[in-house]
Length: 311
Picture 1 (tube, rainbow, N blue to C red):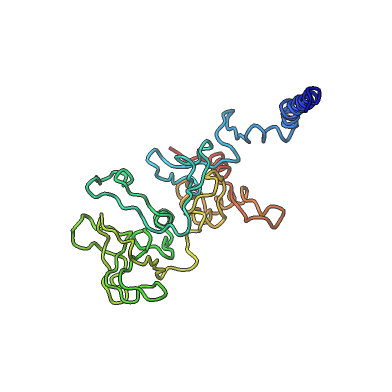
Picture 2: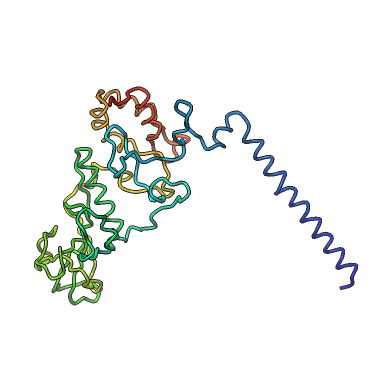
């Protein structure tokens, strides 16, 4: 290759670089910025901020937690679904829990590090996705005075899972159990007498609580369905986080079980609360995409505007 061809090729590459830099670095961003200034689009481009009394209080696109400083639900507000984004609804940490449907075994806490009233996670406890769902369902059932039971959950609000130990058949299933352990129900201390477990016997073998430090991975992991209804009173969106952790919406079913509590806390009728729900309920996109939703943030703002809680 001679020098003139080399210079010509580099000059063509440089011109292409300059043209694309102008288009993608200046013209395109400027066009997007100008489009964002069009009336009707400007508010969305600014984050769909909701102002009350001249002050920004929320975004139409991001949910919020309506709890006190200790994380307890405020009774006068509709509660959002769980969030795995940071400490909850953190737009800088949008994410899901990354736990899948087969995540059903808890990581137990070290009993020697447990202190009364402290967060078990400080002692190494990591709940499985199943236990998180069960715990949330039980808590919501108690809060809303509905049945919080659901399949594969114990009455104590943890995953109903057994480790069945013994010889296996040709299919890999334990045919004659010699030991059965409720692996998500730990004993109070290593070596202590068995704590109460959700099921007393499995295939004729007494079910034991899980001793800390023991390895039960050799057993067959068996989730126990239990007798709970296939249609729990606490809907699925009440116990699971969205993929982004930021969704401001809940299902009409979750909103419905909160009506009595909110009405009682605000001193208004259930009919008035349902009217507010209807004002903030949206149907399927284009009539067939997705499911009907209720915007919790907008709903709570409307309730505050019309039926402020008397201090």
